[in-house]
Image (cartoon, rainbow, N blue to C red; front, side, top):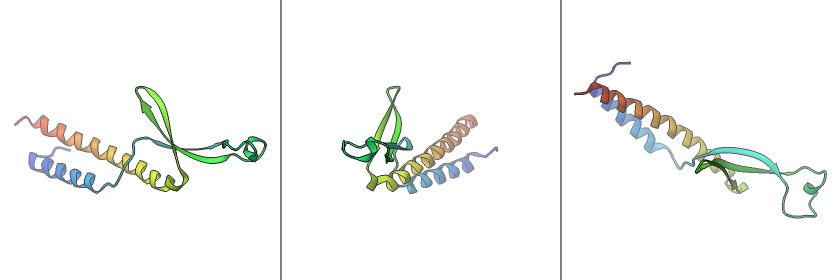
Length: 106
């Protein structure tokens, strides 16, 4: 799509407005798993089901890291991770608009 400078600037401002509407975000991927608790007498140490657990995973200095998410924050963190994905898409779109502005060269 070939847009003129004014159309590109308008699109730029629209994308910025969309970015401002995004609530809190967190970088990473939500991972749900099961784990054994710290209570040695709990059935999860034997044949009973393990406890559900949620983590946010990502990388730090090239290594995968996991951050445990307390149960009371799980729904919030899922929303934050969703917001991060939306933000990444908007950043890509904004970057493309700005590349098109550079390509105009005037």
